[in-house]
Length: 361
Ligand SMILES: *Cc1c(COP(=O)(O)O)cnc(C)c1O
Image 1 (cartoon, rainbow, N blue to C red):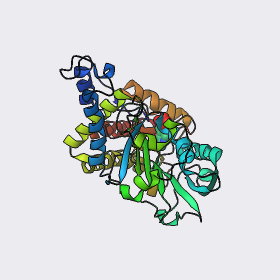
Image 2: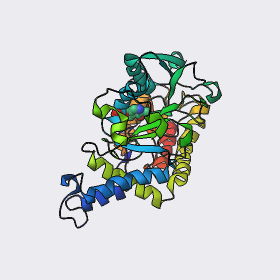
Image 3: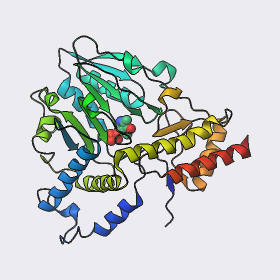
Image 4: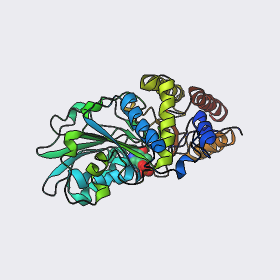
């Protein structure tokens, strides 16, 4: 089999060595005589995987001791509702930065639970920019400030974090978690679906400060209350054992190749390869995003016409470069360059872009 180059936005590329490791251990996990995915989640065999994944997140992402790391089901999307159900009081309000499709979805869910104040809305410009971090100030009496570190569809990424003082900052990091170091202590809660940077779909990571957990609303169904999971090391019910195992393998590999600093450099290099072609193309390729906030994870770009965009995607696909079509809601093209995309892969895309331009302009 020749593996194609995977630029899909999610689920997305995973390292070949992780698949090989899974393949080797799928039928029998180690010498346990069983597959891990048919083994009790209360067994010592699974416990080592589960706690190992959590401790690798703590270590590699430098999570301070006063934070819990939870592994939940329901996708990042469940967090759109779970966060306001726990932390948005009926008589209070929260603050939102609406910077793209994902924060808009989270905002729409939060509004169903309580009152939401919008600090910034990028819709009128087409979600191509962000507010200055220094301008993001919580309103009086706010319960939390909500941001999205990387807008996967718009290709907009925060480079600096707001200082929200005593009001906790909550962040959806689904599409850039562990792609570069983050000062976790600046956040009250961080969450991310695993399927962009860390593993297959099915597990969501929630990193939450201990004092924030004390604010959870009472009376919620057990699964929807963060404390349920925090009190049981995310083993209250059957966890998504397969994605957690696969994520642990991805994290072990990350550690082997130099941890998050190495990841950050590798991601910067990949993004530069593609943005340099865009910037050097004399307008043939155009990135609509404010240069200050261009995403290193999702590079969005347009060509001179929709016909050329179609031809670009078709020719790339025929050459084994998959997933370059932009999200259906915005059109254009998008190259997702998550952790497991190689520098060589991004380089091949850059060369293809140059060749296509030469031929078509
Ligand atoms: C993919 C994505 C989501 C949705 O994740 P699901 O796991 O499919 O629910 C939410 N936020 C961001 C920023 C994403 O990229």
